[in-house]
Image (cartoon, rainbow, N blue to C red; front, side, top):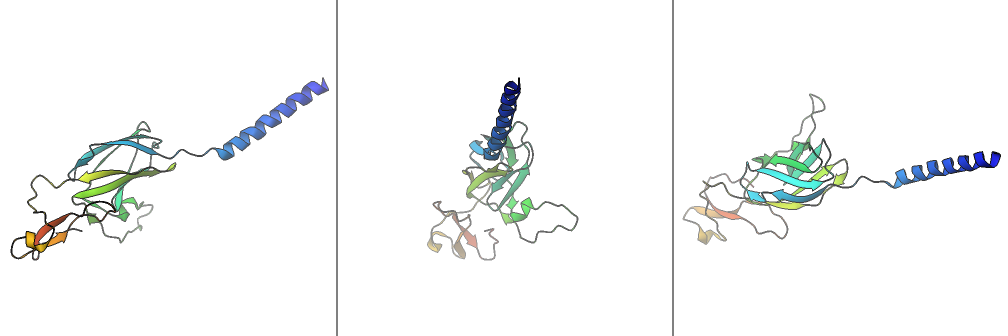
Length: 179
């Protein structure tokens, strides 16, 4: 009878030790973006991201220099709207009435931007979204000042992203161009 009880004690100890060891090696699985629909559109476009390993709360969608915090109903879907401006302060949590962020936002202008997700599981893969010019924008694309009318200058207006073309437009003197 003693051998029988000793056997069960040894088996229980092994299960406890193996279970504890297994928990030490279990890591949260990073979020993954499988698709984003649509993949292009002007500021204001509503985007749906499909993937997996999103958390129910506090998924940060990173877009250009800022983004938005959002929830996922099913752990596989996130939705957000392409904002007019973004900046690092987008993620500043107002934990108190004294929280301030002094970094200015930047306008979102036509160009290609990386989008990725962070949450308590880690950082996802990146996917690109192309911000199109609004349908009523009358800017003229250019490569040099010679492509512009008299009194205009050819200026870079898009974000500088590696391996992506630079967007330039003709700008009249005194006209403000968000960079």
